[in-house]
Image (tube, rainbow, N blue to C red; front, side):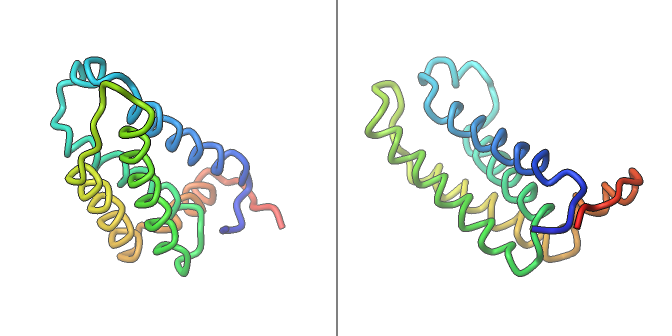
Amino acid sequence: MLPLSHPRLWIAGACLIAVVIVVGSLLPGPVVSMIGVNDKVEHVGAYFVLTIWLAGIVEPRHYLKAAVLAVLLGGGMEIAQALLTTTRDPDWLDFAADSIGAAVAAAVALLGVGGWAGRLERWLGTVPRD
């Protein structure tokens, strides 16, 4: 992890994003359909946000691991929909969209966006803890 002033806060943010993804993945189908955004766009966006958040708080050598963790969460959610819900069906195209979101985020991170949390903290004037 990068030397950040508030590492627990950044980790809590990543956990919150993951919880939102898990809850959204396991909500009953009729509730999710009320959102009105294309399902695949939601998947790409959610896993992009999770991966870019992780890439903001870890060193560049861990960007691929961040993307892999996001993809594993996506696969786990498709399996959970099959096993734990009666109103949701696993869709491997959703898993593909999750993977695309994570891969695009990792690529964007490698192009210079990664480590954004450290830059934000420096801009805000906070001093990283040792």
